[in-house]
Length: 313
Image 1: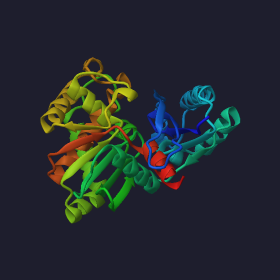
Image 2: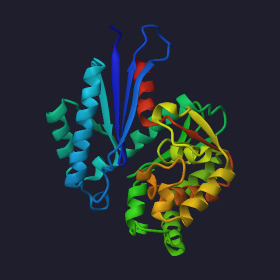
Image 3: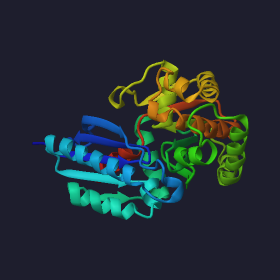
Image 4: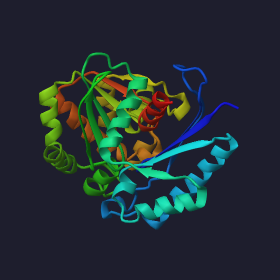
């Protein structure tokens, strides 16, 4: 039987599983056998305190157990699992890594933010033709946000910031019942203008001409543009996101209550509130860069890891 590989990306909000069959011929695309994602909310209730709550810990273990069943079902021999911000900063992060290994036999590699940015770039390049132009790649996770300025061949600048959507939600929008008030939006923007000073400087220096939003929140914005919630497998690798569509979605998100947002076609209920703070962040990025061309990439970290492994094999 052909060699099969499973890639697991343990994000702060969502855990992803990708199972592929590797080609025997060089320069041939791997065959995707399964794409799955589970809203684990690993950072919920604890990320701002530097811990994984017992409930989130249990959800993570349960999800990895289910992933392991799929891995066995598909007779996968090699598994690569990575964990990012929530596990990276939690006091009990290593405890979770150990519990996962004891329960499933899966070894989880906790990666630093710079490595995360590198893998995201490799993943985006599989989905979006960056060409010779400098693009600003943005990945808004639940725990951290990665910004990369790159073209198809070169990374000019990259940095990871621990200002993900769950952290922003905890800090600026703690009331889950309703509208995000104007003063909370202003407070988030003021915070971003301080924390993201290195990004402002990099944009000024490298002058990117387009933005690529990687997975997560950007998949949701692409779904909102279409008015339809799609599964991981249904998403095209790359989508043009009209500026007018983002602005319309941003207005809807800001002005709605929690229940109204959950009812918007294309929104995953789990993301209903996080999308608000993520959109404030993205609007800030568009404001400092003056960029109007937006593309979304359904590929990110796990596809980057796959691309890297394929180039080594």
